[in-house]
Amino acid sequence: MNQALIQPERAKSPAPSSGSGKKTTVGFVNLGCTKNQVDSEIMLGTLAADGFELTGNAQKAEVVIINTCGFIEEAKQESINTILEHAKLKESGACRVLIAAGCLAQRYQGDLLKELPELDGVVGTGEFGKIAGICRDLLTPKRRHQRLWISPPPYLYDEMAPRLRLGKSHSAYVKIAEGCNRNCAFCAIPLMRGKQRSRPVASIMAEVQQLAEAGVKEINLISQDTVNYGVDLGLRQGLVSLLRELVKVKALRWIRPFYLYPQQVTDELLDLYAGEERITKYIDMPLQHINSAMLKRMHRLGDRRVIETLVERIRTRIPGVTFRTAFIVGFPGETDHAFEELKQYVEQAEFDRVAAFLYSDEEKTPAASLDQKIDRAVMEERRNELLAVQEAIAAAKSMERIGSTLDVLVDGSAEEEGHWLEGRHEGLASEIDGVVYIDGNGMDSGRSGRQGSGPNAGEFVTVTITGATTYDVVGHLAGESSSALERASEPRQPRGDYR
Image (tube, rainbow, N blue to C red; front, side):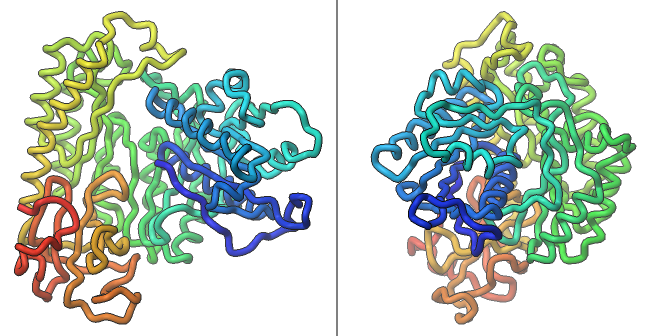
């Protein structure tokens, strides 16, 4: 994820001066996961509240901040490339200060400053709340040395933190905890984010109330280990307790928890999913593998029998649930037999969504010292095979939607065609899953200025599904005719060949 800057409507305090009486401009690039996105939003809000001017024009930014990702090799390389790309602005633009923040900064600290002399400052994950003061320090005239702001990552934002949100105005991410207590052999998150620290229920509730009052309809709950929420606070069934409070916020329509570890999933939690209409019938649960020996080698709890039992229990207790999972291919010691077992399981289980990641050696993780490493070419071949199996399953599931009528949250206009709207039903999470394309031809105009305009972003509509691709579906508002299928010979479909 690489998100552009936003311009705040107003600053809350006198701006730092760039020397001409104007506010100092800050450019910001967000990389990585949605947890990083929330961190970026907090830093943006802190900077705006402190009087800095945010700009989306990198050439005009006097301070450029890259919120980096350090999770796997590809993400680390993207972060480094982005830093080097923006370092050129010191010659071609207005940039005086270049800062690397976030996970890569926390993980490599002084090494980044040494290897990337273009950087002026490195800011770890425990220092986000100090970003405005850090920028001021680095802007000090005649400053000669690079600076490092790193501490153990105790920082955990609360409802009082200023925040400028990126993305859709009607959908928001809320980080309910930081860090992780698990010991997965492949994962460096505890090295970058520390042990789990959960926010109090009251703090989360206050933030969600604020978001709902601002028009947010969908709340996405995120953390490194959401199912373990509240353990560090002494809560029993902490996620259940939190969800029971959140469903009381009447202005919300969807509450979507992400990243449920496949342990400690109680019947109480599943029954809450099934019984509360505001909690989406959507499970996001990375399983990582199915071969018992591989799971043990990964330091994952449980074996194949445990996982199969859990998946069946989830599907039984939450009728109609959408199940999204993720697997790692090429973990050290993954034999051909182990991979074939995984591939067959994916074919048999028929998950709605599957992500497949290549194993990456990460320094200081237990897996880095394991033997029996797999060649990258083999890993890529296995990933392609796994995704090919899933693609056939996903296509069949999309086809099954044809003829059904679904409640859809409108996200806005589709990029490809002005008269198409884009939205999501309950089983589609923003940015990582497919979309629902709504044919806008024939809709009454006048509400948003689009030709043939219809519902606005943030509204829920009822859509009759008339076609499908592998991951997307297409339809029209219930009660209206579908010009898409009536004029199938015209190139009107926004993406793919509808089957």
